[in-house]
Image (cartoon, rainbow, N blue to C red; front, side, top):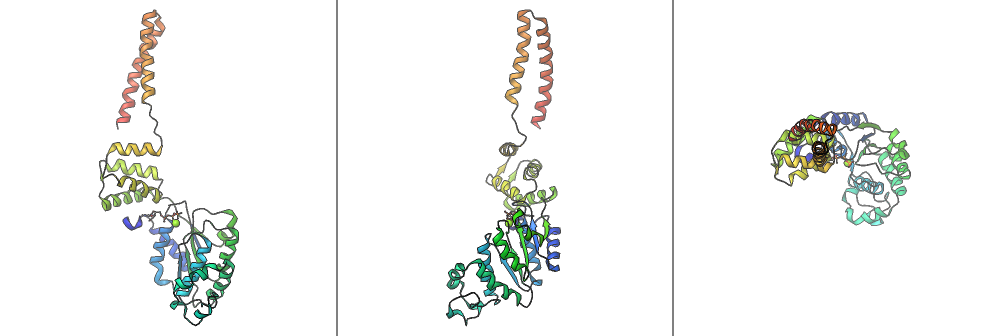
Length: 307
Ligand SMILES: Nc1ncnc2c1ncn2[C@@H]1O[C@H](COP(=O)(O)OP(=O)(O)OP(=O)(O)O)[C@@H](O)[C@H]1O
Ligand SMILES: [Mg+2]
């Protein structure tokens, strides 16, 4: 999404992250799924890349995959040798950057996390400058895997994301400076919706109604905004009825009272006639009053719905 409309409303958070990276802190970006942690991390790394000597970026969400990826990138950066990674002897004299990954991939994959950690740590420790490891997601780490990550913390600066700070790996969180990613404010959501409308050319009958609907329903979560826009984007024209339908789909504050009101009206009106027929004056008067009240109520209720 940030590729279509750019990263909106996150300048401050990106700047804060860059400042922490410069200070050499381990940082964890937290916030619910889809709030934009990865997008912020990407943007900060793009902006700060020229100030980081050794950068390793991991996209894998599983710890084992992350460690294999560290090994791969360290080989490519010339930070670690084939021998240290216990690769076959024929690679021992080849410099890391010249080794074809696909030739050694399965070998590295077979190593345990413990072996990989033991190979990686001394290599990180002797690097000219402290490597920065950006790891997209640390949410699902187990305590055992955390121990391997913690070992890395002393020899590299780790920047990560987590949608949930699981208590069982709180030792990891203690070592990291937390930056909490907040929902986008209303004006940023508006900007995002408008940019999307321009970029994709969907036609919207009443943009303000649509935007305020998206603001309300998304809770400022970019992924939610994106999903709603994407869904709308399938229709080339969004009219008011569709916006109302979307509200209905989301199931928020939309109960259809119409049948109930019709039945209530019928009961009140028939009270009057039953009263008249049976000579029950009280019923007749109540029915008449009820009808008058009902008509007044209906006038206001339907005016509201028609808005
Ligand atoms: N400020 C923003 N402006 C525009 N698009 C954004 C913004 N923030 C996030 N997005 C887009 O919203 C989507 C979700 O963002 P992202 O993947 O960064 O969330 P996340 O917090 O990392 O989620 P997860 O916990 O699932 O990893 C992505 O498509 C991203 O490009
Ligand atoms: Mg993410």
